[in-house]
Amino acid sequence: MSTQTLSSVATHVVGQYSQVGKLIVGTYRAGAQRFVSGANTRYAAFLNSRSLPLVNEAVRDSLIDVQQQFAGLVEGGITTDSNRAEQAIDLLAGGINGGIKRIAATTERVETAFDTTALTTVGSLTLPAAQVSLEIANRAVEGTKRLSARVIGAEVEVAATKQAVKKAVRRVKARS
Image (tube, rainbow, N blue to C red):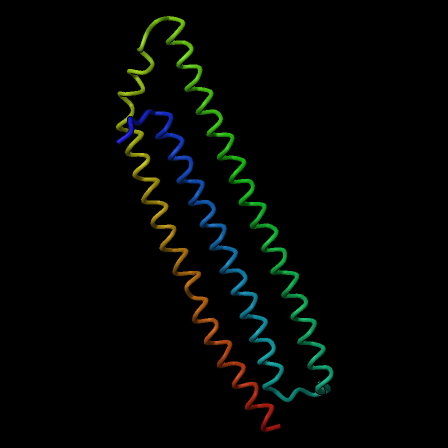
């Protein structure tokens, strides 16, 4: 087992919370895209299942096509924004980790210059509190992973719903 320092634990905590942020962004992306896809499917099913006045097959197909284009734009915006959020998380975590490294290097220089280990001793005394923070961060990652898996796992239910809607649409078309 390697010797942990306050800076290594702090860096690991930052990494864990960075992972939590990315999991949240990925879950948002998947959930929002699932929502848009479901709305698009329900819209098409609605148009195909009803006999609307002044709406013939060409108009219906045109309305569905416009809805699909709109859904594509929304999904593109979701993807772009979530990619930017992940980049911001990486940038923020990198800045914080850089600060941790600078503080550790400064501490080492001060101790060398004054021939003391007082700062390292203080760091050792605060290490248990840092390890508690790390354990909290680890649990946050695990909880976020479970939440994310539930949201992303719902994709299977959406796929089954889409197949059922397609069957219903085919039946309605066959009756027409």
